[in-house]
Length: 282
Image 1 (tube, rainbow, N blue to C red):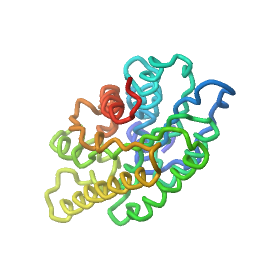
Image 2 (image 1 turned 30 degrees about the vertical axis):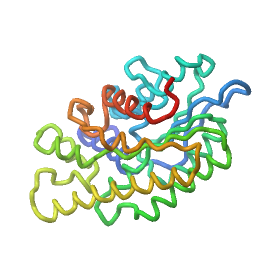
Image 3 (image 1 turned 90 degrees about the vertical axis):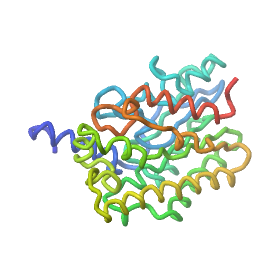
Image 4 (image 1 turned 180 degrees about the vertical axis):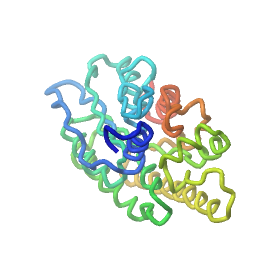
């Protein structure tokens, strides 16, 4: 989040693990060349959430539903909102987010956004830095901050006039709270989704409770560093003020395949709360 010829369940598990546990390369996918004139458009950096993963009821990316750059009718994305303000931005979207990406992928993604000459860049990263095999495998806080700083430095150097929106990490602990009593969610999570948090989801053993608390605390620490990193960037960077982290996610905002990634409605909710913080609302 094993190949053809094996059971469908095993294939499903492999797809989920690829999306959720950093199984992909940090190198961003090739994109079309940026237009030579007109507004530079919008670029999205991040992980599977920003690719709209599983929002089309298939365990793969569905970028048309992305809260940031989506052009589908089901999500009032940042791109669609900007398009209403300026039709010249049409088709100038670049989604460099990748399923499984961690903060160390931001630098490469930012380099791609610079090549696209993006004028507006959204950043949502960190879930995969905590969604590892265990607490000890989570990205150390100092390393997370250094990775974020490197990515933002590329943007500040290459696109100094671009607006940047840094988004808080969703409250994944909240997902455990609302889902651990739901048999469907627990079955999905057993396929290997965010094991540092969701393994043994129904257990009340002290060790499991401590593990979940450690994940919750690490997300809070990452969010603190995201605020500081945006502040250090300067006046062209805005933080969402914790808007995404404060979303009180319920199961009806999640897709029914992995009960982890937002469905189209959830993507719309992310777009709504982050747009208020973007400074671009008309």
